[in-house]
Image (cartoon, rainbow, N blue to C red):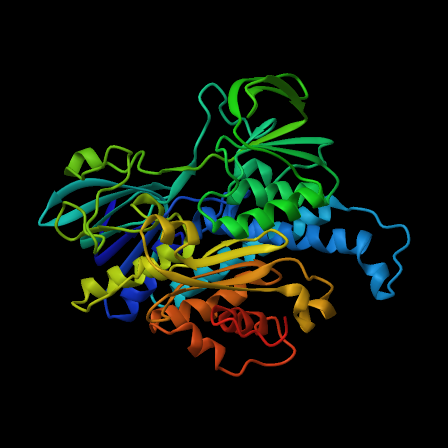
Length: 475
């Protein structure tokens, strides 16, 4: 077994890890990145959950399924008649896999471009004596040494007790992306991001989808007004959303799964599904890391304990992304990865948790940044609110998608933007303007007085900012 020395070793090549490696290399360090994810042929598949079984493949299927639904229900309105429409699910899944591989290959190219040594295998701490010794177990076993180690090992889907994932009948996000035939009846436990996105994909393709959510409210982390609007739209589309459910026994059969639960009225219910997706959150991935060998501290929930700068209890060992506190978002991990690389270089890397955008890529999309109205009320912060519906936006009418609205929340005294919430077309793109504005401590009036292209969906953002001062121009 050979030993190779580096300034920085990054464990994990998901969004946090590969970005940390690239930034460290840009800053002049010798860098290695280790990742064990493999593709179907056994080759390296960097990109983590996001690229392989999360963000990227889910968006590919969301796009494909949306095209299918438009072709079947919306094209006629545009004067486009589609005769004999049929689903080729095999081709849809093949396209998804192609998109994933393009992203895998893109990361490998970036490693080569930035002279980063990539090792395909499982990394674990072996020893600590001035520098850290990292063992890599893979096709070729290696020992790496480095002064700095960045842990970016991500997260795993959380299982329900008594209902382990078999990825055939009881599915995590991984299995939900590889169903080879549209299930007649699909159950989804958990009305969060993954549950709603995967439920939307298979509903569009023909499944009868039932969502079972334990909380008594829909999307509790989302602004209440926006969540209520989204719920109304999803139910209209055909998603059956049941709140306040207490899940009981889950019994897989030969070809279906039976779920027993108590509904919000306290009545016992039983449902039989062809497939069941469980999306109840994720747990940090620290198994096999060798944390005990070097005394790496984990918190009571299994996350790696870090301070505000992503420093662990060990000198020169850092951790970023899903494996530490904070939202489990790919872009949050990326920002932490950049910040850590810059801190290693003696710079002042920074991640502002208050301006991290959130997105749910359903149709309509839901996106937000900053505080919700219910949070402002709970914190006793005086605020002004303004909303503008997409039904009054010319571009939305031309697109044929006028559902939803933009909502601004601003400080009652200073007019500083405290939060922006969107449900509607292209919300994931529109939210960036709000993030920029909040980073620069802009006021609602600042956005209201900026010229926006006409016709564009972004005009709804301007109009919602105008609505804070009760002076919309088009509604």
